[in-house]
Length: 168
Length: 100
Image (cartoon, rainbow over all chains, first blue to last red; front, top):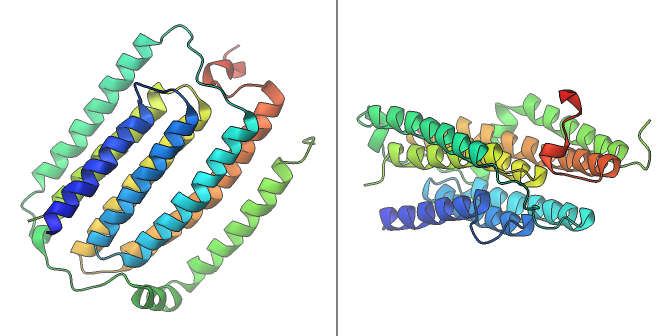
């Protein structure tokens, strides 16, 4: 059952990821944004399989909610049309494919080399529910948590300053 | 049986897809989305290691990464809007002032 769902979500994530970065039917950024959301939702499914329930919920809230709305808002605000068909960058496309492919081969090769590590099939004894994660967050990591809230404040102020009519 | 290496392989594939998007797409916004995909692939690897190490620390790190990513998206998109107001374009080949 677990493997069925893993392959389902993994296939969904990879297919939507491919359609996001290299969609043969549409160069429209809105399509890319929609497929990005589908990828994030499939990743949330994979998080559930990994017993990270809280992170799955946060993933959907933050990515399918906030980030997608921000992206769509900016796309609509800038009134972006499809990527104009300029001189097709075949060289650039080819080099990009080759380097990304080689990088994928490198990563997959190293994953395959560690296939028989003792960690491989350990049974889950911890659950990433709200309670254990919250306990850990507020007992072991209170300082990073506070720094994170300052970071969010700084981000908010920064966005307001950047969005002002004229930058001085 | 699904083991650690399956999750790591999925994470590697998604990361390479994000890299491909950064390298070949020319719209600044789509490049930005591909960056998000790479960040999520790293998150997946962290959660997988956390689950198979019987240790929740990795998930706390992922929680922080998601927070930083949300702030980063807001600031980055504000920068893109400011850039668009200045240059009327988000096509990366038009942003070559440092070239000449």
